[in-house]
Length: 149
Image 1: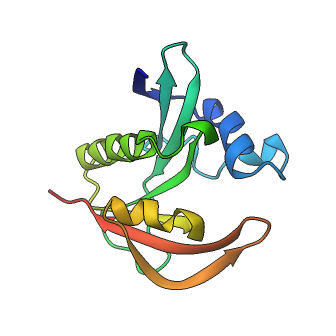
Image 2: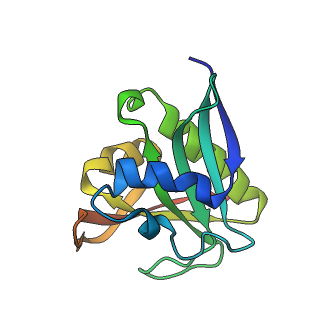
């Protein structure tokens, strides 16, 4: 399957955020704080028919567990369920890491669902701190990886 990774506008993330990550919330709740900041960017995996089949967003944002200069947050990572496990998520994250590095980023962190912990570990992320719970979503860990070259 031919998949292209490309930048998208924040509003192009909303449908997949809703369908994959937060179906129990109204579509209006898919607008995340910082989505429209100048440094924030959003990427999509787009199939040969032009359909968005995966998304991820990146924010210049300090980690809640001790910020460092060059911290960026990965948020809203989602891949269409039928295509999960085929490397699309890893491609999205790697494309984001490359762009974050270009913008001077040195560390990338995320609030990872416990069910996604292995995915992030395979990409070099390490759990930091204790497990915590996000209401209506479930248990998470803060995970981070150094990306400085």
